[in-house]
Amino acid sequence: MNLYNAFVMELLRLVFLGVRLLDRRPPPSKDIRSARSVIVFSTTAIGDTLMNTPAIRALRKALPGARLTAVADRRRADLLRHNPHIDALVIYPGKFRKLFSLFKKLRAARPDWAVVLHGNDPDIPILAYLSGAPGRAGWRESRMSFLFTHAPTIDRDLPFVRRRLDLLAELGVPEEGERTEITIPPDAREAAARRLAAAGVDGAEEIVAFHPFGSRRSKWWPEGNGRTFVQRLTRETGRRTVVLGGEKEKASAEAFFGRMDERPVVLCGEMGLLETGALLLRCAALVTTDSGPMHLGFALDVPTVALFGPEDFRHYGVGHREGKAVFRMGEAPCERPCKKKDCDVEGHPCMASIAAGPVLDAMQSLLARPTPV
Image (tube, rainbow, N blue to C red; front, side, top):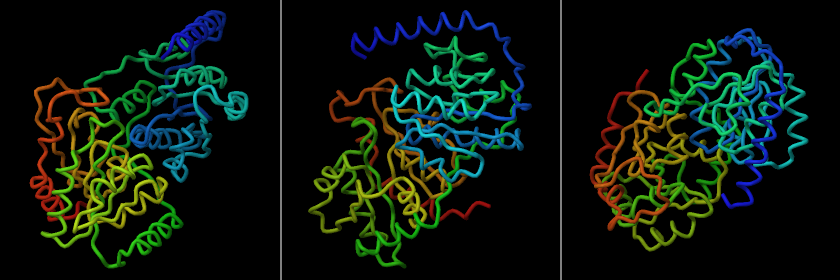
């Protein structure tokens, strides 16, 4: 954050601190279950959005007659677009963008409660306050936590799904399990089938989705490991590899795999979230780093091998059905979790130490397990 932005944020904080001190409304009961309208904020990454779905499900179960409105980031809104537990979806356009239009939509919901499940942008607590909700829940660690009426402290030893559920437990909401979920509509499934056919993948051909990238370079599985995995997967199992990723990874994918004899199908940057989910449903398995596709695989019950290096899988590796996921964590002399964007340790050991052979063995073992009921 540059000095100007830091100054603006501090000014806003002081303004709303004054507004809050002048607000004489008594805080509501800590029990949310009598609410008739609730807004939930889920405005961060793919994984965060999906890890919020157990909390949304729990809210719906606890408040069957209430109107639930979800506020989601414009880039990840599709993850909640067909969620059966919400009544309305409001698009969050980005930090301090189109605030008046967003403000009107939130006020129109006439919320009794606003719950910030996860929202890193500094205007989210402000929007929760301006929504008019008498009850507002979020985390004490937020710089704007004084705008919440209920703000417990984050237990950083807990998995992220568990943290959200515990926030709701503070409000009287019992949990409805930790599994994440997403609904894939028929048109996305049809689009994925057409895309695979256009890439020359036969409808009966067994395929494995592969995502060696990540939100930062330190999470990437090294090129040599990925190439060896694709080569062995093709030769030893006869399955075809489909490489997934965003537009930013397209050039890297072509450089990594373009000249291989066992060239995979590269679909980086060609699909939205729902079509990617539909494609995963078509796959025998998914091999992925700690990333958005990993969370999609968990939510869709796709057999998933997840490769962790800088982060701790015990925090992120949740939300899947038991028996549907295995984890491989690299060895490194570093302290983890590590938030570096690029690894400065020679050889990038936390990811490079995850060899292709054990990953393939883990995938084969996962596919050999009986399908869980």
